[in-house]
Amino acid sequence: MSHIYRFILPFVLVTATLACGLITKPISEAKGFASTAQAVASSMPLETLQALPSAMPSGVPNIPGMPNVEGYLNPTGKPVSDWNSIPIMPAASAGQEFNKNTYSFKISDTLENVQTFYTDKLKTLGWSSSFGAQGGGQGGILLFTKSGSVLTITITQADGGLVVLLIQQ
Picture (cartoon, rainbow, N blue to C red):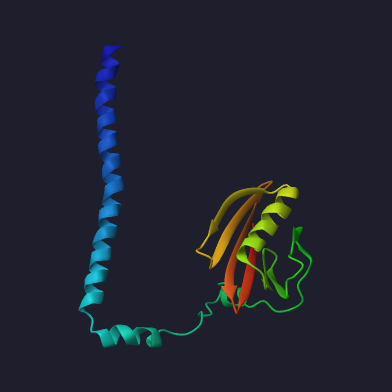
């Protein structure tokens, strides 16, 4: 029995040493990258830094094969009451299906009311809440699962109201 410990102890020590190196190396690389970015930014003249936002292209580029993300934030059309067996809030002012897995709608309501609506309604429909995060009052993300299906609900502010994006996979 003592022979086994002679082999296991060095194995555990080598494994732990390698694991610590694999964890700390990416962290030190990230710190190095951050300090490099900070050095580059601090060496630029203030006028250059102030001009950067105007030099950036406006809008979201339309890349072939990529979804029209900008359209998700500006749904048009009459909202439906139910999409893929997911209830749509009755006060929705506009809604649009972008493909069989993506629907978004606009609503003038609070973030908390939208989160409460979906948490309560989906729970009664058999969905399990897996994740919920609020982004400082600016928006939130809810994640639900049911029978191998995943529903992501992203809530964000837009045009004085909220846009709710439903993605079901």
